[in-house]
Image 1 (cartoon, one colour):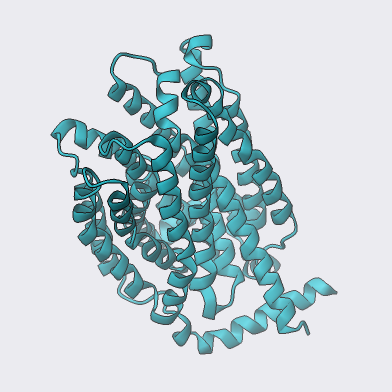
Image 2: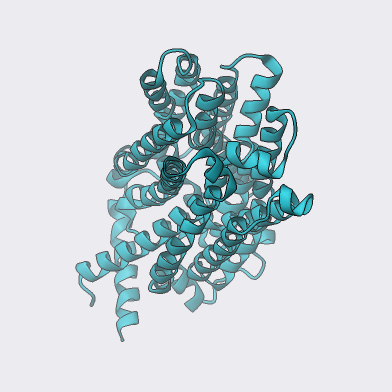
Length: 449
């Protein structure tokens, strides 16, 4: 029989590989957002800078239109052929999309072909991203023991936020080392190119993992769904809606922190792009580092209580935080940015084990990917666009806060429909732990034969 140390090592390797992939995916997916102010006139020239920025942000959002399609593809792939295969393929496709982004011609050299190719590259990235988070959450949920599902899943959230932070650091460093003319001419390509080494590291890590014990047991029993989507719609429609409702809140609160506030500080606060990018990187790093702590809280108190705290914090702090982001200096703006982000780690780490726990193994990846990706279209990729549009229409620089408040309320209403604590945390897991540990020991032992 395999030792507990062997099992722990196998679990750590799986969690690291899953988290590494989310770093790559979200780095590649969001570099564009941090470069939106620079890139918009290169692909959408015009006399109105707001119109150019809105067009650029619309392209950013277009990638998210592909996420449900990608989610269905990778959900079927993962639920029928294994979680590992879905994780590897999604990262490869993201690398292809990022390479295309780095090599794009601009409007000046290719005319209308340039924005068309930009949209194609973003659609490839969006298709890939559709399978990443659902796949990573499912893999970790089925790999770690029942006592540490919150902590394990928090590393997936840590990975995604680290991707955002690395993107901000890459853009800030490139901006600091180049002049405005150089950044406009060729510097904007460098952050995209830097994503390719990350891709190779992630592929190496994911190639070394096994599939999850739960999927392998299902495969051994021939308990694999032949049509995951059809089965999902018959057996789990309520759960898909619950993932969607909570995903609306998670995406709105998260993407406002990760993609919009930086734009807001440049346009409304009047701060320099370089200073704002470094500020955003600092805040996002702090958010990312708090993920494991939040994960431990989930294991201690359960998903519902931590999620409730995160949603309330986001709703309550949004308006006052945005109110003081302008006119009080960069230090005050950075502190306000930090308060604005308080709810983000609580929401992300509590939903990370909650989402997969709502579904059976047969349709788990498809269910998480479908519900979450539709929510991402509604309030994730569109967050920066909606916030910019609100200010343009209302003339009120604080109006994006109402978007956050509304999304948080949707999350609170959805949370109320989850009557039972589906993932209750470590103190409720003792009985379940005995059976799951035995299954995991048998699986590891079988691999070693």
